[in-house]
Length: 351
Ligand code: SAM
Image (cartoon, rainbow, N blue to C red; front, side):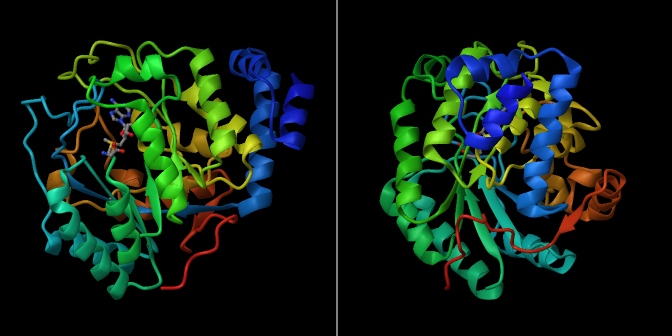
């Protein structure tokens, strides 16, 4: 195992059976060696600073019906909300004062009728805070929409591919959604000059370790600047609400493998990690993750953006709790890096 880990670190690539062996590894010394090497690589690239992004959950209105997601269209138990322009700007103002230099606008997928509204919002944020990065995570749209938002000033786009296995994709999504289209969107985003984030849920129903290997191979080919991975967590009003949650340990292991495969990638230790285990976020960082995304959304809308049960949005998971986050990171020898935190392989564009 030690040889495999060293080879992954040196050559950034293994064959499928070798990735599978790393995912199956049980010897605690081997696992610790993997984490230690991944931490070392992250520290070579980024030092001991952890980038922070202020997350604004724009809306829980969604036209899609993903079987795992709490804000899916057919979940009638959700009270729907959309933040006003003033609320979004207010969140960014608060975030900027706290020190955030990246805003992530995330939300359910709207129809194209809101495209201009979003473009105007991006332009306003870009003008008010020219030193900040704007990340979007708003789902699948036509290439022209992505181009318009990029033109308006967006720098980065997060769109998890969810799984590279088409069969699994079709088990997790309704038939009107297509695996090929999701991958096409990622290609468009890259082509338009966004820093792009792809990724998956770990432990989603019907997922196998072999399908996770396919995801690793896709990520190493596509080389996104950001990799968003978190454990699946059931939401009780969804068709998959009775399946067990994914594992923090397997997710951390995937962070470590991907850190060795893609040393420069920006890898958040995600909210789902913090939601599943009190030390989940720190375990992610100790496995090579280098980003956290505290919640900047207005307090009263946070509980409505319920992608899964018991989603963390308070304490160190909240933008207002950065001191707590700072202390937690300090306890493991890390600190917050307040810079924009662009990918080392992608220079920021001048606007
Ligand atoms: N609509 C945008 C999109 O499709 O990319 C962004 C919002 S979507 C809710 C963000 C991510 O939440 C998804 O890519 C999915 O991986 C994750 N997610 C949704 N339901 C989840 C669940 N039950 N457990 C863990 N992650 C979940």
